[in-house]
Image (cartoon, rainbow, N blue to C red; front, side, top):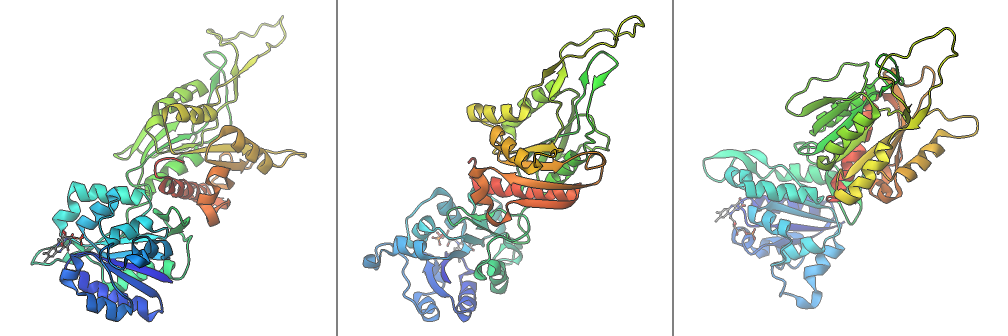
Length: 441
Ligand SMILES: Cc1cc2nc3c(=O)[nH]c(=O)nc-3n(C[C@H](O)[C@H](O)[C@H](O)COP(=O)(O)O)c2cc1C
């Protein structure tokens, strides 16, 4: 594998020598690209002797080789260890004022930055902001270790030991791409996913997820309504899965038969009854959401007329006829509104299909996905004694053409298990898409 090992100017540059040795022992070709400051800590002869390759720092050295783009273009993996606060800032802004930052800009390979700095620098809002922006863009910024720093002080900011960095790179060195676990490490151009550092933030940290759950009731008169069998269990499981993935969650609950999780600092609750109330709640919440999970079973039709007083039974008249009218298509409407006014980057629709002798539910779901224009559609096959009110379920997660490439090996998903397992699979895919989108598709 061709690896670029960037080294920036921190005291921990000496540890990168051992990392270089570990990579070389495995037979990788490693081009070391130190910054000018890094050479103050470890000199060029050390890097050249151990890598067995010429080492340059400036874009105007070895110009005939066009190293400022070639190194990045040809790399299978780019690792910067240590990554200084300064390097993170330059990488975030897309500067290309030396060979290392030019290489980062030209690289199409997975990029792993391993920061090391004093705790104050790591916690400074500028660094926090730079790290968040880089992660949003798909760069794997590893959490620094905690421990003794350069002076007598200690705290987070230490470069992890070379063996630990090497272990973190393992899936990439093995040529693996899609691995289980929360993902925000994504190489946008190479189209590969890889596992983040175990200490990394959960996949949806800092993201806002809106979930709709349960059924709707469409009133006929003050006493009677048309409803459906949705219990709300799948929606609640989705809210719990999103919370577990670190998101800020807003749960819009229709009629549910299950206990709702308690509201808290990361969970807010809202109750609605009819499809039109749900429509208003979604319209209010969607613009500020990153992900919208539309698990509520929304009535397609409602009584055309609402009787303000209870409809009376009169012995001399036949039973009344109920005329229905269509409810708004909240999913399609939200997708359309997003194009005009912005809204969730990832919209996930749900389809409960019974299928029939002539039609396969998967075909119905594919058609629905095309019609609605959302990124993902979750199909569950429903019927007597199937899914509704049960703890177990069987789902297919279908991805629109626009995002199939992004999901790569993990698509399509077919989950048979508990509703929470299904919810985890949906949330996992939504967060992969969000991580890959850089804001929108
Ligand atoms: C002794 C010493 C140790 C340093 N250690 C670090 C460090 O661990 N992390 C860091 O971000 N900056 C550290 N710096 C500051 C950087 O060297 C400085 O910001 C430099 O401009 C970084 O350049 P570079 O990002 O191009 O390598 C240190 C400076 C000195 C003099």
